[in-house]
Image (cartoon, rainbow, N blue to C red; front, side):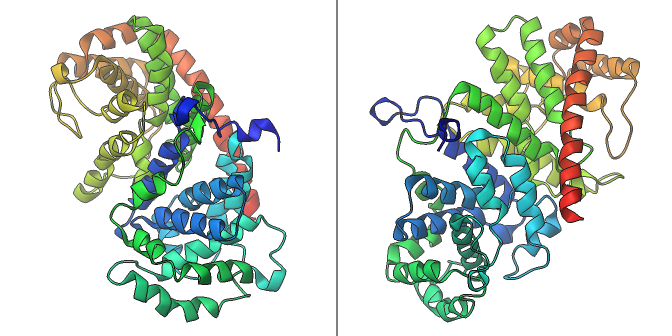
Length: 433
């Protein structure tokens, strides 16, 4: 296998992780996807854990085990709408392959995920007495683990429940399930710890600890490339957000340069900009694209995304600062923002930069409820927000001093992102057709 496809399998000295732990990133994406509905609680964690344990029984290679673990965590990440997510809760459902293809299209451009993307693409292909032989074997393992997670709650009596469901699952061999995978499942039935792990309130930690220290780490270059992939996962859910994170990331980095922040923070601000709306993965696309005013309940759901961004990123080693900067983009210097209600004195300077970058970018682009505002109107709103104590006056002044330059460069960045979104949509349309 080519080295470029395994660059994320980095072993640090003495088992330490030299860089950013990839598994932490993937875990937070899975967590966001499961926040959409309480019925999805820990679904991705359960699929990942069971797929990994099945892979161990099947004596698969280390590379395959990582594909099973990460594939289980990301297998439904392409289900953008609320209805798509709920449809996937049915044991058999119409058009199961669309969301798998969406995830594949987004993940395949990250070199370390080339083979993983293929696993996810085919994870709903049935075995069909051997006719499903042409897809990665790991796809069939993820498919089986996914269906087990659908039929088992793993709540009150996990040991009794799994034995009770065994005849039902067996009835779909070999139409849906590979016989060899079902036999591996049969061997797991007597290993009580597997099913008790799946019922555990510590499942996230259990899944995290499946990866030895020092494995699955990202260097700085791959970290930023993966942040761009995540930004696409966030933004490509809606035409109205398709270029937003790219714009915020550029503006935040440029403001960091103009305000004299140390050079080492410029790329970190860029990463925070790409990740700032991570929590929107938990927001149904039906709310993101609603053309009229949101109801009070919908507004509460929408506002929760900033907290979810913090909740997800704060778990990741070496990303504590980025977690704060990214999640505080809706905070206001007068304490009237959210999710924490912090004042200027309580906010890091980088968080205040993110807030200005987000407001500027949002005002300058189309939204479901209004077209992009004209430059003069954007200026006026920024000035008003600074004067009323909402945004940092010095940072706003710096942006206004370089308004035309920042606006032109931001539009250039967003136009490139728009081209990428158009190509993505075209592929999805071709697939559906």
